[in-house]
Image (cartoon, rainbow, N blue to C red):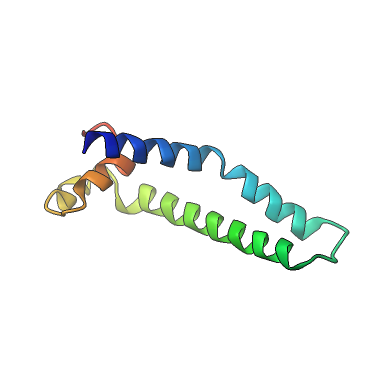
Length: 92
């Protein structure tokens, strides 16, 4: 289970560090003077919007839900290893 938590932390770190790429793509699509695009551009744009929304939800959870004060509330949950891996790396 320790390896799964490490892998989850690594994936979360990669996602957190590389979220700027979808954000830059969204900004490029919004403010680019070339507005004529195909279906692939729209699909990639929607995927990037989804990734950014997922990141914003993750930031909200990390900042307001899964705080150090609320840690005892989640200790009875079966998902505790996932919570510890993502939001409480120092408790493990």
